[in-house]
Length: 320
Image (tube, rainbow, N blue to C red; front, side):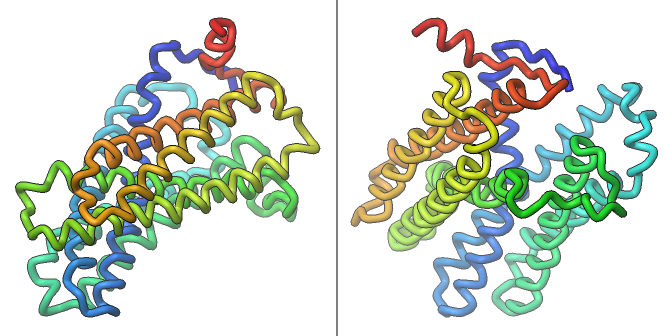
C-alpha cells in the first residue's frame, strides 16, 4: 500500500486517535463505573459514569460525521468496486452496522440517566447492549485488516495468525490504549464541566483520582503489550533502526510522563488543583499514541513489501 501524507497532516494525527479512543474506550469506562456504583451503593461512580457516557456520546456523533464525510468524498473511488469489497461485503457491512447500532444504544443509555435511579438494572443492561456491538465492531475491523493485508480467506485454517505472530499484540494494543486515552480525555472533561455539573467538592475529589487510576492501570497494560510486541518482532525485524527506535522510545517516554502526572492527581488531597497535570496527561497520552503509530508505520515501510507511507521521522532525525 502506497500513500503520500503531507508532513503537516501528522500534526493532526492526535485528533482521529482521540476520536477513535472516545468511540471505543469511553463507553466501556462509563459502563464499568456504573457497575462499581451498583456494587458499592455509592453515588459518585455513577456520576462519573454519567459524565463519561456524555463524553462518549459526543465522540460517537463526531465519529459518524467524519465517517459520513469520508464516505461522500470517496464514494466514486475504485476501491469500492474492487474484488476485496465484492468478496467481503457482508463483513464490511457488519463492521459498520455493529458499531452504529452500539452508537444508537449509547444515545439511549446516555439519555436514560434521568430514570437510572428507579431502573438501575435496565439502565445497566442498556449500557451492555451499547458496549457489546461496539467491541465486536472493532474485531470485525481487525478481521477485515487480516483479510486485506494477509490475503487469506475466512474459511482457510491459516486465517488466524500463529500464536507467536506479532499481529496478536498489535491487534490487542488498541483495547487498553483506547481506555487509557479516553480516561485522560475524561480528566479534561471534568475541568470543562466543573461549573456546569457542579456536584460538589467531594465528588471531584473522587472523580479526578478515579479517572487518573483508569489512566494509570490501562497505561501499565499498554506498556506490557508494547513489550510483548517488541519481543515478538525482535528476532524478525531490526527495531533499532533510528526512525523506528526513536519513535518507539519517544512514545514510551510520553506515556511514562503522562502516567507520572496521573499519579500526582491520584495521590493528591486536592486533585482539582492539578489542572496542568490533568491536561498534560491527556496531551502526552495523545502524543504517545501518535508516535507509536509512527513507529509502526516506519516498521511497515521498512519491512513489508509494497507498503510505503512516509512519515516525518527521517526529516526530524536529519535535524539532529
